[in-house]
Structures are given as structure tokens and as C-alpha cells.
Image (cartoon, rainbow, N blue to C red; front, side, top):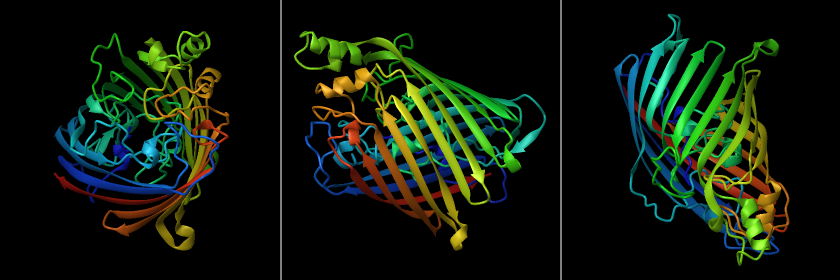
Length: 438
């Protein structure tokens, strides 16, 4: 259940002179250690956030490569390795406390292919605009009106639900519910990647993107389901850049997704247990091909020259099991970050955000009856919305080296008022660097 850091935020800022890169080579290392002291819990289950004190490290290493065959055709190939399950094996929270945590018990620390894709730029006009080269795009200037096509292995979150303030767990917040829309059931394997075809239409004041993606064969698997008539995911996002007061930059994104695959039904599992058909509430006994769909809103703006604000809303159907990464049927998150300019440290950054997650009735009834889901299972449930308050302070120490201190205060962990609150302390060390060849 590792969700990769978005490549647009990682490892590199382009050539110093702003020119395009013919070849790209960069890398990053991210180390996170989290600790929580003992916290009160009336009871615990097999998938609870353990109430005893716990400490757990994780690490992720990624090598990004790219090659520009022409100004409009590029290829990317990334290798990655990851290790560490995080506190409590990343179980017991609807919003994961560390996006780098790996819970696939079959996964090893051996390197694997993260991204392998092609990008094609189709100009729709002559006007050109500057673009910073990155691990996802090597061109320094692109048409303002263009169609971009991508095909191959990728992370859906490299392109959908992006946010300048709350997206990059390697330099910003650590909690899933703040760096992502927790109600967005992303098509991905247990390492956060999938095979997809992506189309993006860029216009000066708006962008539309659509991706058809492959679903994994099961909720925690690495193997893709190549039969698109059996398992697939549609993702659609519309992004606008309206003018607001004093011409401060503002971006609003509207997201919709639909996943089609075999998944468990919470209402069927509850009914099966209460009718006596099943000896215990069991999602695995009620798996059928179905569709889970949802929607999201995502906005960000800048206030002055130091403060950035963001907010997210998320909704999904809720009656089907979450297939990856988070367990939330409703979510709202908002917050911001502030550069250290006010205290004469402009490269420093401090962030503060709040996320509130909720479950629909059949979902929480299943857990209250003792059911186990992908991430949750206390053996019972005194339902309450999960609330996550997170703050971090990120310090650059030069030459691509960063150290951050992070604190998360979580009320009703796993949506259970009988447990918590819990405070999770974190230290993150991030190292990145890049090379460019014209």
C-alpha cells in the first residue's frame, strides 16, 4: 500500500538556463520514522492501530530517467525500491499516517519498475508557454493549446487530484487524507502504480484530462487484470484557473471516477450475517463484479507572497469495499503552508491542515458487527468521524537535502470513539538530485 510521491514534485528543477533536457536522470531517497506513545483504547482488534507505544521506519528510493526522441515525443522509465510497514503495519486508520508504508506481505525491498510510459504532444496552436522540465516532461516550452497523450505504466496521482500545497508526502504532509482525496479510490496495485492510457487537453484557462486504467486482480495485489471487460477504471478531471481578487492565482479541479471490478458489498455482508447465512460478517463471502464511483473537488490559492491555502471535498458510493490506500466514503480537508520569509528563512516551510473522514451506514454497521476490511477492524465500533490535524516544518539543508518534523493528532482512529486520541510524531529525511544532458 505504498502510494508514490508525485513525480511532478520530485527530484529536479530543470536545467539552470531553462532549456529542454534531451536526457533526464534524477533520484530521491525518503526516510520516515514515526512514533506514537500508548493511547487509551477500550478494546482492540486484529486490524486496529495498536494502543501500545510503537515506532516504525520506512524508506523509499526512486531513480527517474527520461529521453526526448523529439520536441513532441518523450519516454520515461523509473525504478523504485521501498521497505517498511509503518506503525501497526499501516492498519487501523481510515487516513494512513505515512504514504510510504508498505503492507503487502509478499513485497520485498528489491527494485521494481515504477513508471514506463511514452508522452506525445500534439500542438493545437502556435503560441508557446514555458514549462519546467521534470521527471514527467522534458520540454521547456510547450504549446499553450495542445493535446497530450500518455501510454504505459504510471501513477494516476501524478496527473489527477494534484495540489501545490497538499500532494507531496516527501516535502509536505505525511497523512494520506491531506495529501490526497481520501474518498478517491485510485486504480493502482499495492505499490501505487497501474497501466493506463491518458489524454490531457490543455487550453490557456482550463485543462481536461481522462484516463482509462487497469485495476489489480484483488485489493492488495500486484498483478494487473488485463481483461478490461472484467476490471477497469475511468478517471475524469476538469481544471480551471479563474481570476479572483487582486489577480491572486487560483485553481479549481472537479474529479469523477468509476471503478469496475470484483469487490465486496457491505450491505450484503451485513445482511448475510444478520440472517444467519454467515457465521461472522465477511466481505470475502459477498464479492461480485460491481462499480464503485465517486466525485471530488480540489482548490488552491495563494495569499500574498508567502501563504498558500488548499481544500478538498470527496464523496464515493460507500457500499463497496475500498480497493486501495484509504478507507473513507466522505472526506473534507483544508489547510495551508507558509514560507519562512517572515522569520528570514524563505526556504523553510511550515504547514497545517485538518482532515475529517466519514463512513456510510452499511460500512460502519459492518465494522460495528465485528467485520474486517482492508484497513480496519477493531472487533466492534462506537462510530465517530475520524479527525486528523497535522503540522510539519520542513528545513532545506542544501544540495537537495531536507529534514522535516511532523506531528499528527488523530481523534477517533479507525472511526472508533472507544479508541484514542493518538499523537503520531514523525521525522523525515529527504535527499534528491538530478543530472541533465542536452
